Figure 1 (cartoon, helix red, strand yellow):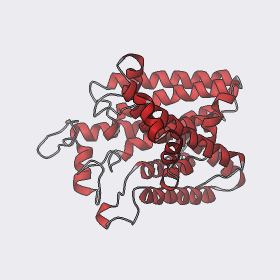
Figure 2 (cartoon, helix red, strand yellow):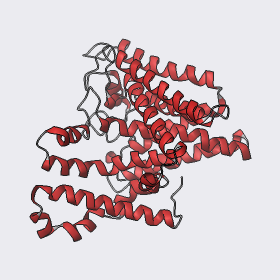
Figure 3 (cartoon, rainbow, N blue to C red):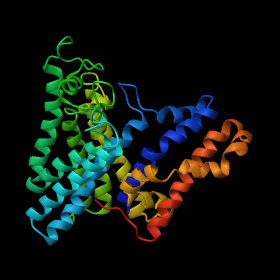
Figure 4 (cartoon, one colour):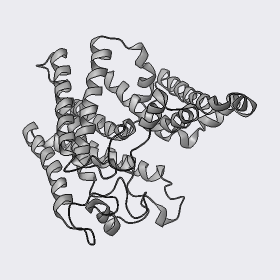
Length: 357
């Protein structure tokens, strides 16, 4: 249950953070609310805010899920069946990503080949196959190799006009590879935050989740040991990531290796906290709204394409009510929009309607 809740918690920020930020900014005059509003914005380039954690934590959770889902498949079938399941699921996720960014409703040149769902699909594909065919020690070697290899590429391979080891936007190797080899539409002009080369460390993010899943699924450990291992791993990753930062800055938009460790460290700590509270202490009622989302992440991600929850909210708190609320109008509208979203997910959960891939 803790894994579903954490997945839902992550999706909540993916689909609802923008409205909350907008509402908080209207009433913010610094102080605690101002600090929250600031944390719900991505860093422009270097550094780390809470908002920068959400996407890599979802990739991390996908890695945790690999251990449990493929473990169940292998209990009933062989590796061939598991491999086919991985390939089919990754292909479907990738195709859904193409559709999410407009699909074929736009000119061919406007199709976005790499985006959020596509990155999840590719990270899942390679991490799942590695988990299926490699032992944990070999997996650890791949993880370390990805992190160090990506650093070596960006630090040592020169970029025309900028040289090697330049991590500025538009001057680094990851952006250059996108400029030269990623066709069609790119999110940031001539490069993409979910670009080609930065997919390599994203696989490492997913592998960190695989190791967390192995710790949780270890039958030889008790709950206290599992939580302890996650906490220690999280703190070690954070220490390594920030220690690496002066040499290889923490940058989400090119998914630097230091960013992988920092985001992975925080993800481990969140997973440990959710597991302790929900699955060990059995304090669960507060987490149910996140569970409603967590068991249906694809549906809620696409929900806004089919149901305009904000338009529904405006029927109740729009127009004269919105005006009367003054600077609190944006926040009330955002909270009402989120309430409709939660209600919809609860409706689906109670009727056991789930969109699986």
